[in-house]
Image (cartoon, rainbow, N blue to C red; front, side):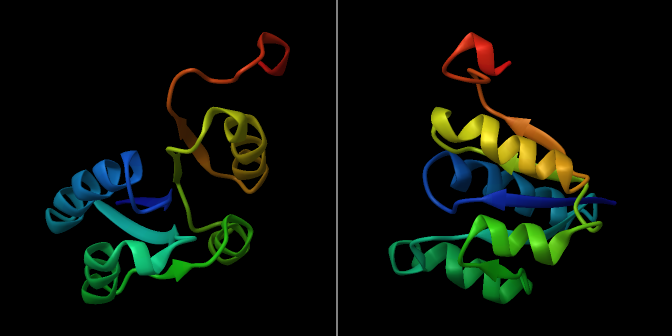
Length: 110
């Protein structure tokens, strides 16, 4: 079973999460955590997390600390300027990383 974490709960993050919920229902993935900065803005997602027993973290750093060694894939559907710093921190924590395109804003960051 693949252990997955996601940053965010709206926009592209929500699309990732709805797909992951389907896979979790089949037993293919376990969602180990979600970092949500705006829980009041995503009540339906917050209900899903509570119903499914998914831990919700108020920051990316707190989620990384909590899931270290327990996350196989970190999904980062975040703004482009955050791709590199967030991906590097996830890689350092031992996670594989899914970053949306483009990988970075400046070629030198690759």
